[in-house]
Amino acid sequence: LLPIKNPDVAKPEVVGGWRQVAADGVNLLPAECYVTCNRFSIKSGFEEAFEKRWASRESKLLEMPGFQNFVLCRRDVGGKGHGADKGDEFNYMSLTVWENKAAFENWRTSKQFGKAHGSEEKKPDDKP
Image (cartoon, rainbow, N blue to C red; front, side, top):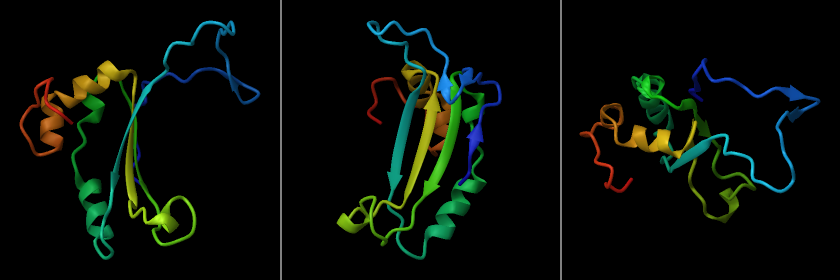
């Protein structure tokens, strides 16, 4: 649900299903991105309102340097597998991809974050 993608993000070349990178088997490759996730447990009957609220939000993500991608995911709770059969009632998840952790932290402490989350600008030492 609700994908937002930065069209300016370059994708690595892929040949035969594999990214083309210079790997020597010894040194770590540089990190390609930083991914953040949030899970939401929405009570039955409130799913449509939750989705409409997200769909009507004015996203500030595209204004932020280092933003790459966002998606809101929904799963059907109550079925077998994926934790649903073990009491995990989280039925929505947001996933955001950033160029690196510094770009995410910049978002978290920005005026845009405050506007998107209905709060004032956060200070760098505030807990998420």
